[in-house]
Image 1 (cartoon, helix red, strand yellow):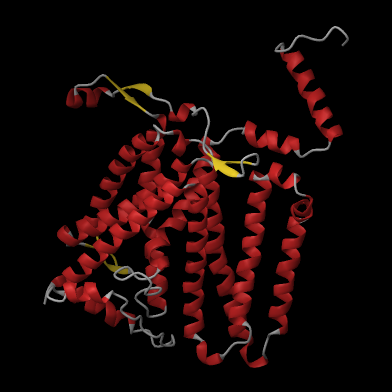
Image 2 (cartoon, one colour):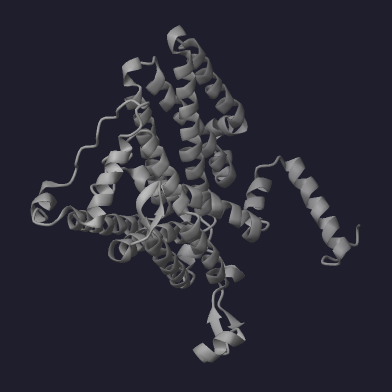
Length: 424
């Protein structure tokens, strides 16, 4: 028996060791019949290789198509993935404790998902669609009292949960209440950060996500062909060879991919909504971050490369940090997911994608990446945003706008930028 097949069998046996967790129905093989017949003569190892490869190319092709369709479609994609990941995690809890027939569990879980999405997306609308909202009186009330409405909706769900408590299931119901809220923390808040990154410029969305995808693919390829040394017990199929090969490949890929994206306004300009045309636009004067600069090559590398200077975009230096995180820390999101699945004796979150498992199986590393990118932008990149500030000024009352104007004018006169008026 081959080593890889032996590891897979031991992995399956290990999943059955914990006796204190109720059995979860096993996943169904969702491989299309045409693929199953075409690959019927191959071993399980190579059959899985081809299924994963074909489906990976298909998903990447669809992803490129959605990128072409624009930022709004990317936002819908993020929302769809968020809902599906939430469904997969909640379904695991429902299957594990299905026999208890907890009242309102699934209904309340989806209700809380709706409430949290209403809160986060309402905040996004208030931040980026202020001028559009001010032109529609029916929306002004919702935005003005958005946080109060969100809190009231959550309180209604909280009260429904308290009313649903059953004496013999108190502990289990509070356990599932916590399960739902942790799931919301993992899925909704992270997807909100992904969209916030997207508004900073599509490049802040594409480079991190593509780096994680590249690391996942490269680590799988290196591990498949060269893997010998186990990396971590939580995921026996992961090897040091795959981890190192995937990491180096990801940094190189991120550096080259960033060079390509930084050349186009479509990718580097912040995503803005134009109320005049009712559409999202990506037009701007690129920041210095995306303007070609000349850098001196370190002396140690000059002898190897034969170059004294090199032309590159400053963003490419930041891409190294993003790619390094994607290859070194990002996989720990996958290890966390592996530990979670082992705790409940399942191999995959679902069987949505043949050879890959569920949507959550493909995006477990992306959530860590989304948080890192948001923190990285706010810590090292983002400065004052004149466009966003102007939108906030336009929604003020006329008297407030005049006060801002007078204060700004006095400040500019003191700085010597404006000449004081004769009447003043």
